[in-house]
Length: 224
Image (cartoon, rainbow, N blue to C red; front, top):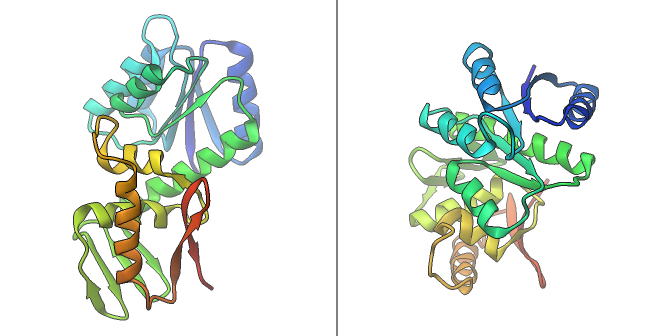
């Protein structure tokens, strides 16, 4: 069972998140600020953390930073009213995995929670297997029908990111931020160049394909 820690000082919102998550089958722990959350985190196994930013005593930024300093890879979803790019950038720099701006769609929250948990499982196992294709994060290798395909690190991480979320559309901006970093000076067209190279190397692969979503970005489709 996945334990989810909800850190939110608004009692009504905290109760709402807890109800929605509990109805989906999760066990939910709650805290009113970062200090309470850290106490729970140190004594409970938490599969994922949902946190606000603006809270008394210890805010969400400091909480996320302290959790990452403790060398924990637990997924963190930040849900906040702070919608400016600097706020989002600071959140990602402190180590959060996803960011939603209030008011939120609760069904979307559930989708993001489940996606983060899937991603966490993949990261923990360090391996994805799709049909006859195996992606090994430790060795940065891809094997297809026992034949290893060489990829530079950026190409590997780009492909691994999309493979981990099949059918999810990634914008060029999202992929740049994830693989090259938020402060990168590289042009977003860099993504197109890398995608082209990956497609050439996997043109004979029958397990998946990278699809261009015109005007949006790219997604990976898995073949049955």
